[in-house]
Amino acid sequence: MANVVALITGASRGIGESIAMEFARAGVNVILNYNRHCLMAEKIADKIREKYDVDVLCIKADVSNEEEVEAMVNQAVDTFGKIDILVNNAGICNDSLLLDKSVPNFRRILDVNLIGTFLCSKYVAKVMLDRGGGKIINIASTNAIDTYYPESCDYDASKAGVISLTHNLAREFSPDISVNCVCPGWVKTDMNEELSIEQIREEENKILLHRFAEPEEIAKVVVFLASSKASYINDSIIRVDGGKFNG
Image 1 (cartoon, rainbow, N blue to C red):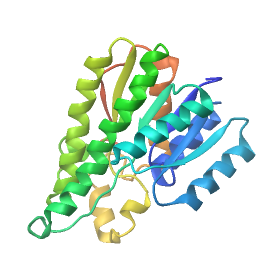
Image 2 (tube, rainbow, N blue to C red):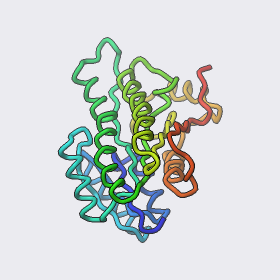
Image 3 (cartoon, one colour):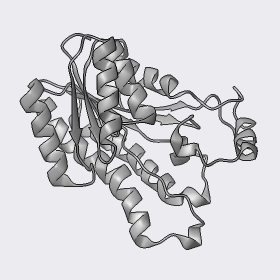
Image 4 (cartoon, rainbow, N blue to C red):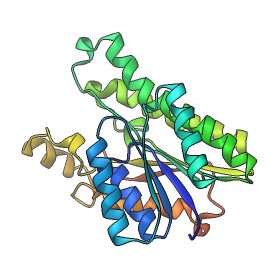
């Protein structure tokens, strides 16, 4: 994928970091969006420059802030002249008992996970349409489909919204922009570091492969969807969960 530019939101760690590394491995120039973790993003950028012959740009932006998203997209276009691929990966969670959740905390989850996906898609799609098309890959979760957790009701609702948004974006931008959604199950990221060994074992027993995914396993699916090999895949919701069941 030579001379291709990908913008990955929430790229300073976890799945976002792995997606950036996989794109760089494929020869794609990458834009690493972050909000709080500047040093982590710069460290990833340095690692990419050392290993791969691609260009890297780090941009700070809160994806829930429209002015910051617009400025990020403008900076990306000023630097690269285009954006071919957008991966809406930025996401947060704040697990707590449902009755303890506050409206501001609930709204913050929606703002980042859902409104952020909408804003980035809106501004990047304008660039893509002006330049002949592109690909948008949204990161949701199996929590949006059928693996619900009451303590994650705000997160689950936000990711269900991302799936709905995916369908509407695909219809709005077809045939110029392909829009797909990846729904991971459990992944080995710092978002899940607070799980006890007992919880991990309990969840692993609900997965046919009996383990959590490595972030790289999610990233490889994203890079595939962004490639010409996935040219006829559009408006699809793809589970990557190792065969999750609720038994």
